[in-house]
Image 1 (cartoon, rainbow, N blue to C red):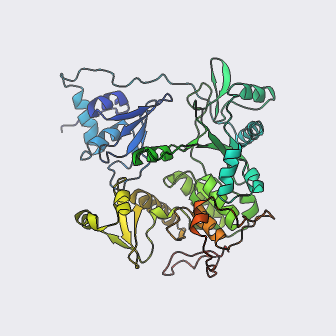
Image 2 (cartoon, rainbow, N blue to C red):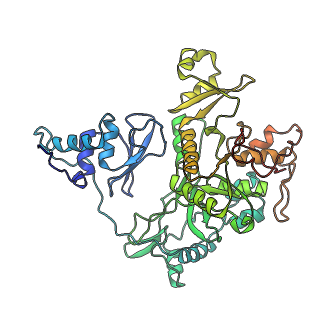
Image 3 (cartoon, rainbow, N blue to C red):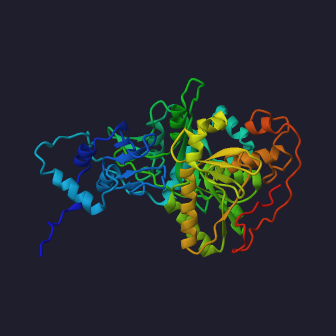
Length: 477
């Protein structure tokens, strides 16, 4: 019987695959990562790690032939979607025998940088707290959090601090002198024999501590300042926003450490006896929503971090907690909304509002829906698929994952709760001052100058599993 020669998949390098697919490279970072434009959705890009040869896409397109991530072979399959993994391996190796494709290097692969293993949570917590004690929160950043509905007491408890404009070397030196661990703590690393902060030159923003269930700081997330001007195109605005949140990392420095996707457990100590936990995107959003509602909000880094979400669901199951989907409304279709087929939209484009057409054409995988009153809105199909994947994970683990729907005029749960506060709801937290009625410098305030009736109270605990409507509105105000 004839057998094929076995091919060592690990012998297939990123460089030879890049030579075969010839992708459109958008950006190469000094950290050894590059952004490449997707061949299936030309408006989107994905990241390739040139150190490992692996790639990851963050858009979660439902029709991706490789699930948005993989090694160099899957990268080749992304550009040749009709090939199975085995056929892709054979196609790549067959090209090695092709005389008209001489070996050549198409990417400048950086030398691997020796990294340290991540330090213990106890060491990281002590180092991060000492580091943050050296920093302050700028007036600009404090005002930004005030506009989101937080009091100064709450802002200080959240622990956010502005990125320093100096001290890249002096602060780590001081921490080292005080006996704090820097090796294996994401953010700190060495260059030219000196410990330093892993910062992007010229960028400003603030650090957001990501707490565990014992209120220890696991890692720091960075919320970069962005400057959106009227002259910017939608693509430029989108790119600015997509790069706003990043982990504080130091994998590109000697003895540094890369950050990992973790869970923001919020104010777990305060709400540890609560039966219901609300899951949303990001530590800031979870914190703001929690302070505004006095409910327990937990945050994953994004709506696509399945490992972190699975960790939450496992914990909910083990501790008999009820998880609730409080992710953004741009990924949810409300009960009663009708999906307009894409073909119908394209054939009658002129009959739809200009703003809707613009939003539909702003990116790939957009879904047009219409409610019973005839109003249109656009749902992000990529986010929708990510949330569906979350619900599938919960279902596979035998956990009922409820959904909280709210007025889609407000994309995030924090925006919605802030709007409810301005409508007359109470904003209290451990005696903190209420939001002043004369604050009129937020979108929510401008939209809600007219007095509106309070919403009818709804049960705080979700309906039992098996009821027709797997969603509810908790009693907040």
